[in-house]
Length: 287
Image 1: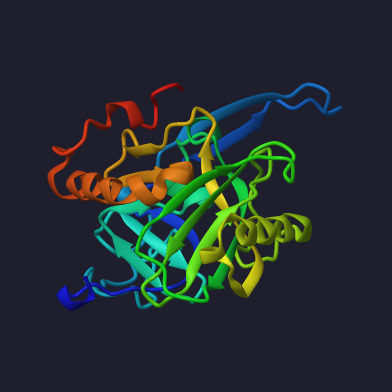
Image 2: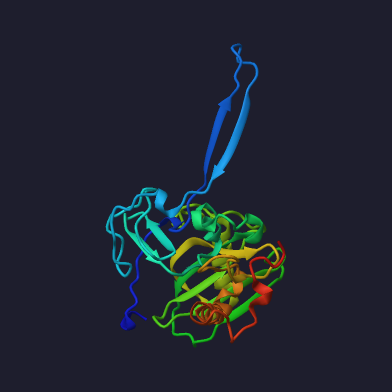
């Protein structure tokens, strides 16, 4: 994608503003006040400001990041419908925005352009799952393993997944906590359980001699984005010009992620997906 001109910007989104949105002004007058101040009749009036009510201070090229020009409302000047405000001080105008940040997808509820999206429409939390990054003693075939293990050594059933990588390392995950939770605001914050990682290490070494790893990194965890209904959201935000959400795939993102990417690209380019029927994944399906 980079070879075709894609530019990747790693930054934290502070807000997504809607350039054409002007919050209504509320004007009120207090009349007929008695000298004692006990009787007050209030008249309230909501005024929708016109485009001419905000003075224009500059003109900027929509194809390049905003350089500092603002209108009278303090918003960057652009003809594109949205503007991304980043923590690096870079403002990027946009026609379409896709929020696909897994268990952190509810961050969009704090952004101005997503003001009509409710928390009940994206009931997605993080299921904390532990993982190891290991180096096997000899090469393993390029085969993923989904295993469920039980027996006298283990209380109950343990599910682990094993993914050999091209560089010779092996990614192993399992030992999920029982209940979803809101992930930490900082995705790099240490959140692992020493007990869970030790248990995962023991299970891995007990599975097979071929999986007797020399652990090169462990004690880590991540959050799977889990939807309360068990079905991801892959949808355009209703009544918007170009806002989309794709998240909540749970543990099957590794399988369904590529199909979701294809379907969302069709939404962006063609306005609808011809590959998949996305009606079951729309944002307002239940609420």
